[in-house]
Image (cartoon, rainbow, N blue to C red; front, side):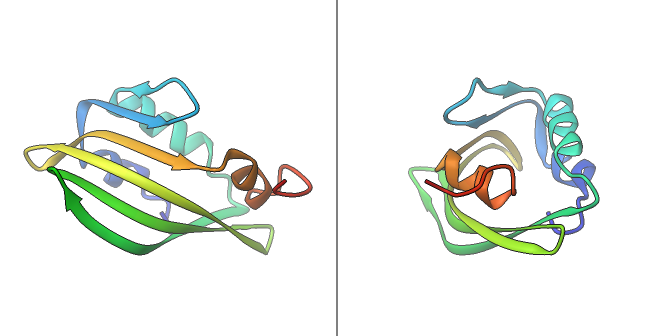
Length: 114
């Protein structure tokens, strides 16, 4: 994430992967995920994922993390839970849970998280 190598990340996904931030409709397909992430990463924005807990629950990889987002030198963060399912070595489904208002604040698009 810190180096924005979206192609390398998306190559870890199945062609028909389902990516869903749970308050939105899912994005279906590796190329659609690639386009979404490429469009969301302007040069003045960076995100580092700090993993706090990670483990396997009933065959799914579950991670609790803090996304540290820097926009124009301002650093803010948001807590995220991600759940990844695999088909062989490739990601087949990726779901994320977070507070949307906190994310918008961390990205600098709103005045405050609440």
